[in-house]
Image (cartoon, rainbow, N blue to C red; front, side, top):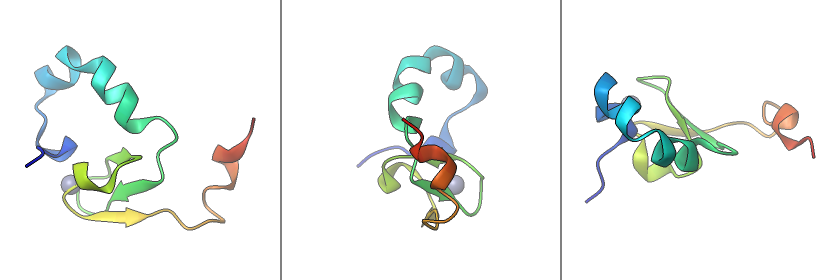
Length: 61
Ligand SMILES: [Zn+2]
């Protein structure tokens, strides 16, 4: 079972910056409870997909 980004403490965010970068790159999901974002819904406790129209700005080359 995967720990969610939402559970990370401030020190974990600092220590696991590379992992955080990998998980949040091109994020397509956000947590409705904690406002975290990720490209993998499994790392969010209340994952919700960004609407396509909201994701438009992320599609720049
Ligand atoms: Zn959450």
